[in-house]
Length: 244
Image 1 (cartoon, rainbow, N blue to C red):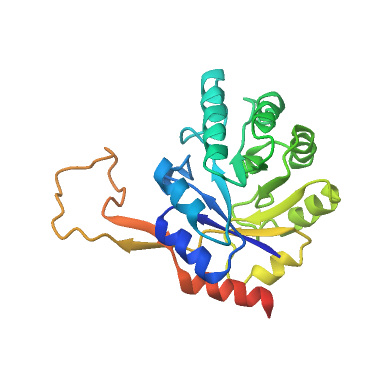
Image 2: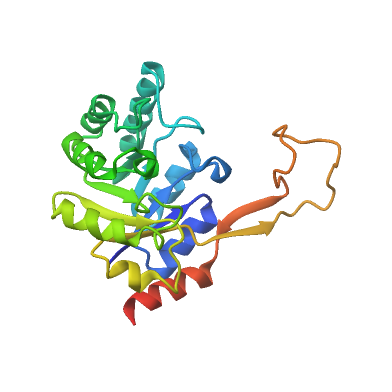
C-alpha cells in the first residue's frame, strides 16, 4: 500500500524519511487547507533520500474556481516544481457549477508532462463524484485524492469502494481525510491504491513573549503561537497497522 504524508514543515519531511513513508505531499498554509509551498521547503524536501515528492499547486485559499491569470500562475509553479526535481504535482480546478474544470485541468496536466499529477480533494466538492471521476481520467491525471465526498474517508468508505471499482485501474484512487492507525487497514481493504494522512499535531511555538494586542492575520481565534507539524508516533503506528 502506497502511503503519503501531507507535510507542511522541514520536520514533517524528516519524519516521512525516517519512518519509511512512500511519498510526501508538500504544502504551505494548513489553515487554508494547503497552498503552494515555498521555494526553500521544496528544495529541502527534494534533498531528502528515498522519498517521492509531490508539490501542491494552489495559488490561494478559498474555492477551486480559478481565473485565467490564476491558472497561468499555477502553470508557472508547475514549471518551477519540475526544475526543483519534483516527482509530481497536486492540483484541483472546478467550474462554478461544481464540475471538474476539464479544460484548465488538462492544460495544467500537459504543462506537467513527465511528472505525476494528483487531482486533490477539490474532487469531493463536485456535484457528482461518478461523473467527476470520469472527467479527471479524461484530463490525464494519474491519481485522485478523495474522502468519498464526506468529511472523513471512513464516513465515505462505501463511495470509496464504488470509485475504486469504477476506476478499474484507469486511475489511482487515494483515500484521505481522517486516516489514522485505527482505520488504516479498513480503508486499505476498500480497494484504494494509496492512503493519504497528515498525522497533524499542534505544538506550542518557542515565543515566551506574546503580544495580546496584535493579530498578524487580522482574524481573532487563529492560533498564531502554535506550529502545525506531524506526529512521528502517529505515523509509525499507522505504518505498523498496515503491515500487521
